[in-house]
Image (cartoon, rainbow, N blue to C red; front, side, top):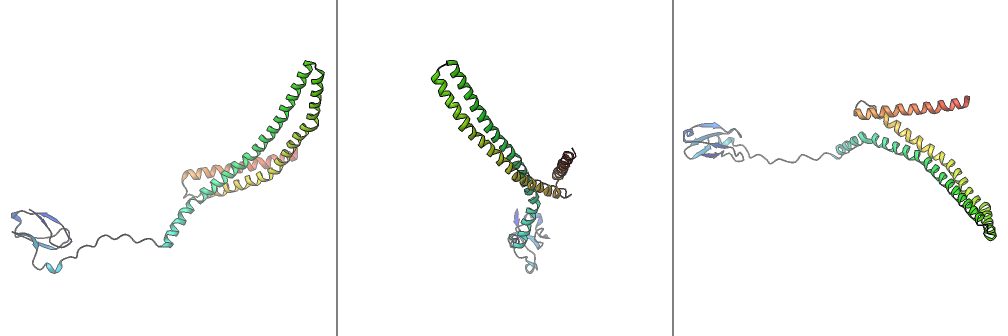
Length: 228
């Protein structure tokens, strides 16, 4: 028959048979002394005073102190701060490397507009000459004069203004590239720490070597140009 430990809060179960009647044993869960009689499982004599109190329900773990939580968050941020620095440096280098290309594309577009308009004028002149119509030739001459004296100089002024603006932007692009390379260098040096993952150490070493090589090429080229 199935019997439950009579100690409150224990709940241990035992499968007893008539051959166990008269035996005494300690509960395997709460340790109290039990006896088996014809009615079932009971507390042994003298065991009532040693009844164990019912176990308390599990309590949730205390919340971490605010200072401990802040320290944990700060530590997690410190692990990734140089990743953010590296990303910011890479973004600056990419952006300011493309700005001069955009200025060059703008200049090429203005040059192309001047050439296209010049070709249109030449084609219109050739068409008027082939027709050999005096009125069309006179109208074409006036249009050509307006192109040479008004339209073309205005387009050339826009082109020159764009060239001056591109030269001014070189100062901005240079500082942007410098800040980007500095951020990359700082993050790469931090990534050389042995506690960093191997992939970060490899990337940091490659970036540092690449920056040193670029500096060497830059200053060596300037020196050769001066000596020449």
